[in-house]
Each structure stands twice: as structure tokens, then as C-alpha cells.
Length: 113
Length: 113
Image (cartoon, rainbow over all chains, first blue to last red; front, side):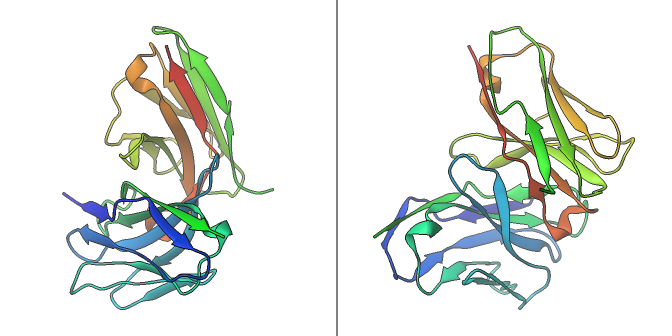
């Protein structure tokens, strides 16, 4: 079945460092791919999405490119801030049965001042 | 503010008690979902409602029931709570099939003792 695998955390970075959080997926066809962010005590918020191969989703300085050949959707940011400390979830929705989204386990990011 | 509202935010139950988690959205979304979040496991779909008047099981439906009361409201009921149902519960909604991403509520933290 469909699945999402993302790198285990926690990831600890200093402010202004480069961030990469790896995400790979298994799915048939062309799923839609998402990154969500969860701040402490809150629900998940949609950060960015991509719906077809080679699409790049971007928001708030974060980017991720839909790579069909490597089945990946890695999250990147050029310069992290303390306020980016949160848990990040990679997710996919298959292009069949489109009411079920599969989430990765989440990666916790700590950014130190 | 527009969005998804969940009540209550916190609840402690004794084993065998029942309760209903409430969810309402004011974005005129057709589809609504209930997820549970457990440490290291990401989010798992309990039930969803593709449109008003329909409900379907997700990945972990045992021990739960749902009601799509109208287009705005989607409730989750635990008939006889068990310690294994200790979790954080999130309601979400989407305009249609979830390829566009979800809007999440802020969650209900439930402890069953």
C-alpha cells in the first residue's frame, strides 16, 4: 500500500543554517504531495504542496520539489529561524481514493539562537 | 476566524465511559475527517465523510462511531473508552477530495485512565 517515510528527528540546527528534511514515498500513479507543520499545542497547518512531477511547492521560505524518478519530496529552507522550531509532516494523497491522506511519522526541528 | 473548531480541548475519561468529540467548520467544505495522533506514528485516519450524508471507515475505526450532522459538523463518539484510545484527536476538512490539502482543528487531548 501507499506509504511515506521521512527522516527521524530530532533535527537540531543553529539559526541561519540550511535545512533539509528528507521524505520519500511509495504510491501508484501520481499522488499529490504535501508538507504540514505543527507548532506546540496546535493542529497541523498546510505548509506547501505539489500535485505533479517536477512541481515545486514553496511558502515562507520553504521549498520542496516533486521528484518522480526518486519518489522524493524533500523539504528545504536556506536560513532557518528560531520560530521555525516545530514538527514537520510529509504526506501524500493518492490520485485514486482521494479522501485518504497518508502521513509520515513527523520530524521535530529545534533551532537554537 | 474561519476554520475548524474542536471541543473540548482536553478530556480525562475513566475506562468504560463514553463521550463525543465535536467538530465544526465554517469554510463550506464538503469533506471532513477524524485523525488520531500518537507519538512516533504520525496521524492515522479513523473515519471520514466525503460529503454530507456519507461516512466511511479509515485505517483505525474500531471503538469509534461518527455522525455527519450537517455540512458543518462531524462528531466522533467513543462508546466505551479504553486506555488504548488515549491520544490527541484532530478533525480536518477539505473542499473536496483531499488532493488540495486539509485545514485542521487545534485538537482534543484525551486521556483514558
